[in-house]
Amino acid sequence: MKAIIDKLPYSKPFLFVDEILQISENGVEGCFTFSPELDFYKGHFKDNPVTPGAILTETMAQIGLVCLGIYLLLDVHSDIKIALTSTEIDYLKPVYPSEKVTVFSEKIYFRFGKLKCNVKMINSAGEEVCRGTIAGMMI
Image (tube, rainbow, N blue to C red; front, side, top):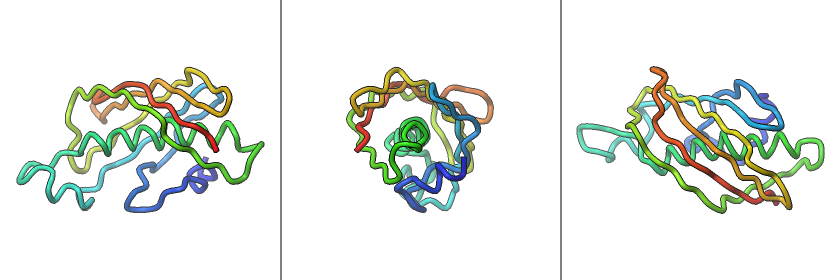
């Protein structure tokens, strides 16, 4: 599963995948811990840092869509590019610095190069922090 992470088109500080826990043709489960040293915490929000929703969405997309897309195409293509096409996310709880989150993704469909997934993120207390759908095109 490290081979999939190594194929991701991201690097620190914009890599939001620490580990892939499970992966199959139907979905993926992975985790990430938000280091308090990440730059966006310095200004979002003053004296009460919270992970921006855009970063939560990006984390779900990297684990739940891109990692799964790479897995699905690993035997077909060596150089896979994925472009995000749509998201619809509900944010339910804040995620704070040092929190570890787990993303669960379930494939809705993968056809004609488009992958669409139901995704959810839980915190280490087992509470759902956000959920929705994410889609992208495999290039």
